[in-house]
Structures are given as structure tokens and as C-alpha cells.
Image (tube, rainbow, N blue to C red; front, side, top):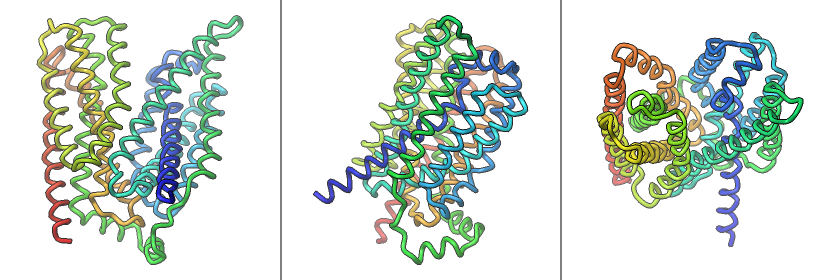
Length: 421
């Protein structure tokens, strides 16, 4: 009974972290569903809005390592609580439809609140919360559950916006403000729930905690950087993340090369989004019952093959075939995303520096946010039409193969380590 109560408590805490992660980012990326309304309400150009998001991306990259260091020295529970509160309060400022200069300050604040104080903290909480045989399912549930919660919030927000804008006397500004209030309300309600419901990690010994405070940032970084498993895990994540990034180009590919209508393309890409909870959670449970490195190896290999195959589909391909391929790639890439953080457990990093390890891996693994959009745009401009897409998709498939090799190699390293024990 005690074991069952402990398991229930851990899963309840996981659920709270999932909801917090699902609520954290939709406000920042409100443009996904309301870009035109934002431009109209704030009286800014698309270029100005893009500048805000470019700045956000830079802040994320700059704060990955510091966020890991911070998560090792400050209670992750307090960091997540602060992040939810700060993001929500900045959202209230955002709802006032401020000037472009103020908007830039808001995005800087969001970058700090969601990058520096949230990112490594919430991943570390999940890594510590899950037992060794639960790492894959916990991270699978984190990514899949987060995607599901984001989808539910977006559905409510879009419906609310549609209702508000059709109300007599209401306009785009008011409807958008009400949507912002919705997201802000969720964030501010979750903040105290996280603070009181989650628990701090008490698994580290007093010696570990003392070492964590005594060791310098660079000493801990050298310890982490000396582990081969860390670098293999980082390469697996950067390759898996690039496979996922390729799906962002499906909309333009289907419309420009296959001549599909905007409505048809939108329907297919939305259907792909619902593959996230299925793929991530499913892969998580499979990864715990089988060897997680083997599962990631197979998933990345299949995703790479399917992506390369999509590049060479004939222009006369039936819409049913296109839908099947897109959904299959979506399922596979979300599955890879769902469990690639479970490789952290294979690195055998002590809890006292686990946050810094997450920061280092994130710095490498999520760097495609910076260069892939530039590569994609350059290829499509230099090689217009199908050729540009073929080079792009095949190139990312090749990166997927590198990820397959690293996942296989990580499995060998882990088995060799376990045999020595």
C-alpha cells in the first residue's frame, strides 16, 4: 500500500509538471493561431514581430547552460513557481497592447522566465521524479501530455476568440485581450498549485549538496564534459530535433509541390499535431519495457527513411497517401522527441549536477532553432521548387542516420558499463 501511495504521489506530481509545461509556452507563441490579429492589434509589422521571436531564440540559447547551473543550486519547485508567475504577470502587461518598445521588453522577460528559470528546472524534476525503469515513460508522458494540454488550451482559445469577435460591440483588440487573459489566468492559478503540491528533491546526500555549492561552474562543466555518454545523448537529441524541425516545412511542401489547397494542408498538419500525445506517450512506455537505446535507434531509423521517401513522392500522389506519410512521420518524430531525454539516465549523472548536464545537452541539442530556418530559406531560394525540398529533407534524413549511429553506440556504452558492475 505504501508503494502504491508513493507511486500515485509521483504520478500526480508528474501531471502537475506536465500541465505547467503545457501552459508555459502557448502565450509566448500566440502567433501560431493569432498572428494576423496580433499584427493588427499591436499595429506592428511581421518583420517587427519576427524580431521579437528572433530575440527570444537568442535568449533561450544563451540561458541553457546558466539554467542548468541554477537548477542545481535553487529548488526547481521555486524556479518553476517563479516562471509561471513571471510569465503570467508579463502576460498582463502584454494584454494592455503596449508599444513595440515595451513589447521587446516583454519578450526579453519571457525569455528569462521560460528559459533561464524554467527549462532545466522542469526537466530535472522529471528526471529525479522517475525511477530508473520509468525514465522513458515519464519523459514520454511529459512531451505527449504537454502537447495534449497545449492543444486543448488552443481549442478553447480559438473558440473563445471566435465567440468574442462575433459579439456586438467587440473587435479584434478586445477578443485578443480576452484570449490573453485566458492564458494568463491558467498560469497564475498554476503557480501556487506548483509551489504547494510539488516536493523538493531530498534524494541527494548532504555531501552531494555540499559539493554542489563548493564546486565552481567550470569544475562541474569539466566533469560533465568528460563523459562520452553526455556527448552521445546531445547528438541524439540534436539529430532527433532536426527530424522534428523538418515537419515545419510540410505545409509549404504540400501546397507548393502537390498543389493542395490551404484548407486541405491545414487539416493534414493539424491532424499531425494529434500524433504528439500518441507517439510520445506510446514510445515512452515501450522504451521502459524494451531497451530505450534500441527503441530510439529504431524510431530514428524509421523516421529518417520516411522523411527521405516523402521527398521523392511523385507529384501525382493521392491525398490519402500524403496524409498517411505525414501522419506516420509525425508519429515517429514525436515518439523520438518523447523519449530522447530518457537517455539522460544512461549518462549516470549525479543529481547535484544533473541540471548543468541538461543545460549543456540543451545548448547543443536545440541549436537547430538558430540555423535550420536559415538553411531552409537559403535552399528554397537557391533551388526553387521540388529540388530545394529534396535537398533539405534528404539532408535532415542523413542527420537522422547519424543519430541512429549515436543511439546504437550509446546502447553499447551502457551495456559495457552495466557488465562491469
